[in-house]
Length: 219
Image (cartoon, rainbow, N blue to C red; front, side, top):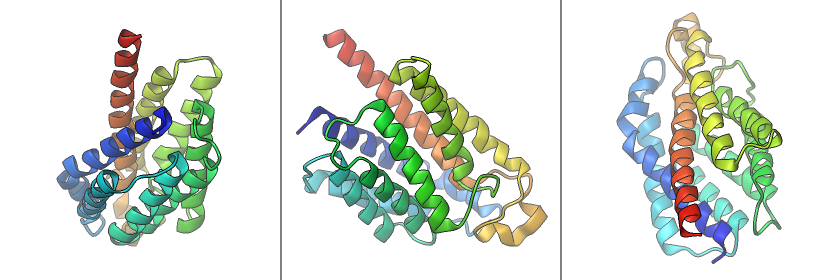
């Protein structure tokens, strides 16, 4: 197994574990103006993802993300499954033929994921969705790498942007999903999907930083 594939699987485990650990938190956020089942749905898909990681082998990063996309689409309920699954699938397509993706390749994959979610959900920035955290975080990651920041530092700063912009969704009126039915009443509460993106960025950033530190010490 390549180093890139090993690291990707480790980060997918972090993603899944974080979803499971925050099940109640995400449900509580979603319950304010939504169905309240977002955390439950995401956690069930995460459990299936962990099982898949234990049982199914893959040739490269793209194939692993493609398999993850299928699992998420099938196992995460409601509209979240197709949206998150589309994101994973578009990332997989972006990384096809790149057995050892560079940090810039990962930025392109995140960009492709965001574009796919926009198309699938017919949504954009300012609609109070997960995109309001994902797109700014990707922009920050790209900018930090372009300025020469080490990948771990760039990811940490991108995670900070994801948190800041996710919290800022409280000032928005939902334009998509169940929350949009609440109209102006959706203002004042954060978007659960955006907070989930921020939480995932933070968890993956911490894991990546720890892995990078360990690798440096071993060298």
